[in-house]
Image (tube, rainbow, N blue to C red):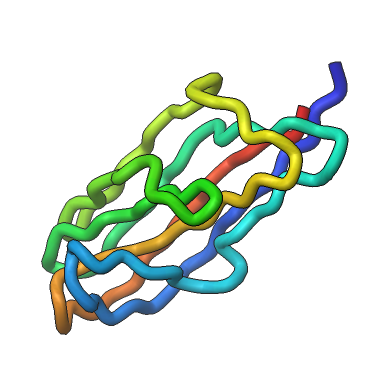
Length: 115
C-alpha cells in the first residue's frame, strides 16, 4: 500500500475571541482529501505560548469533531491514527480558541496520510 504524508503546520500569532468561539487560525491549516484516496489524521501536536488554556479544534466538513486542550505555556500531543477515515472530498481544518483578549503564539503540527 502506497501512502502519502501531508502536514498542517507552522507558528501562528493569535488573539483569543473566547474558548467557546474557535475560529480558523490561518488558511494553511486546511486540507481537502483528493479524489481516489482516503485520508487519516495521524497525530496533532501543539504548543501555546500564552498564560491561558487554549483549545485546538479539528473540524471535519464544517463540524467540530475533536476538541484538544492546549495548556498555558504548555504543549500537547494526541495520537489519532485509525480513529476514522476521511473520504475523498472531505475537508479537515484546524480552528483555535482562547479566552477573549489573550494573545500569544500557537505552534502546531498535524500529520495526515493519504491512503
